[in-house]
Image 1 (cartoon, helix red, strand yellow):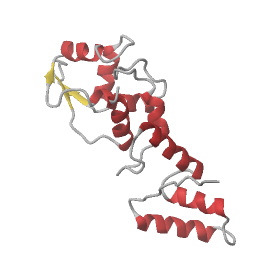
Image 2 (cartoon, helix red, strand yellow; image 1 turned 30 degrees about the vertical axis):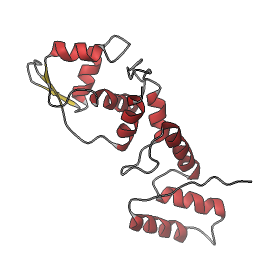
Image 3 (cartoon, helix red, strand yellow; image 1 turned 180 degrees about the vertical axis):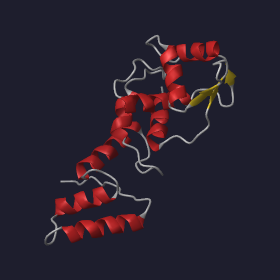
Image 4 (cartoon, rainbow, N blue to C red; image 1 turned 180 degrees about the horizontal axis):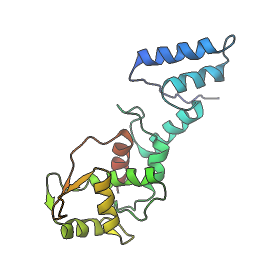
Length: 178
């Protein structure tokens, strides 16, 4: 039987060693193979080995790098990517708040950098990039999550330049293929 290679990388080997030391000290006797796999996965920031393996599989499906500088839950990215059509338009508003915030990053990435837009312009721009007919919801959420700013009189909207999270980068890449 062939064995699938599962690459394991860590951004901080010292934190990995400390975590393994704590887990091994708390364990009675020598841990078994599966227990060691779970310890390594937890030390790398995953819930357990199954979570690590599922994340790698989702990363492969998304053609995303398996070990970005900031860890990403690729299963979550894959789930949120399903809310976008082949042209990168948001087809429905996700029910979970965390998924909504992640979906906003894909819209944020397409907003022209350093552009100043009126409320009417940003609403028209958002109308073209979603399919459920509520640009006001998207406009408000972009401002409330800090991805856009607006003046007190709501006349000018601007994208806030910032570094996307690891999950946001993976989603932007996945949605951008459409």
